[in-house]
Length: 102
Image (cartoon, rainbow, N blue to C red; front, top):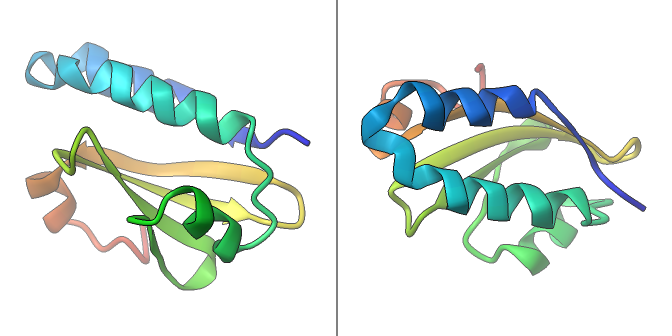
């Protein structure tokens, strides 16, 4: 089974519109390729693939990208295998948002 990833354009926009973040392209694409072929039926399944991921309430998961230089916040609908990209940014940008409400 494949995961559907909603708003992949958010990832592309991030590395294309932020020259200083162009180095995020390959790590984000690697995450995308892996997540697309994952079968995450539960938070435990995500943690088994990404031990450093932080699982929050309401299906939200925070991934460390490029050695924790960037943060990716997603919301996962586990029964339907859908990942919604909610935020991608630098660690400093992440610190300025509320990961539970974005």
